[in-house]
Image: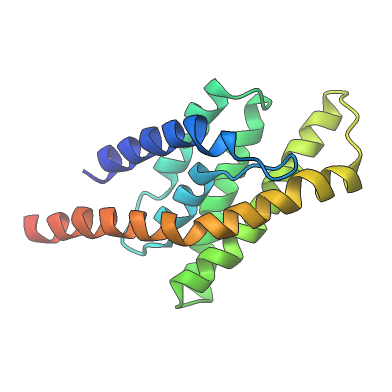
Length: 167
């Protein structure tokens, strides 16, 4: 049930990402609500298979985007693992954790994209890309982090409530 609902959420969020969010850039940066979905899903301690939504989302976004193949998958898995490590070891405040991990994951995602592009021979000036793409993307992701967190928490309440009743 957990994998099915997370897959449906990924498809729904990917559709919203393509249809709505990609049409609302700030400078050259855009929000990544699928990344926010992965972070919010991984924040729940009951999500034992938190890596499955990250793998599915990485495969779907890699298929439809122009980012080089390992970029999306690596950045989504890094976000999921980072979220789980920080939640298990450090913080008990999920909303604060969501905001901090959103900032760190967005910056690391963009750095991964820049490094992969430079390895492939595409010259990207670092300071210009950070100022015009990464910082606006961080801002948009932080704005959308709370609504995505609330949506995912509502879905997870249903998923894990059903799982507790089946035992």
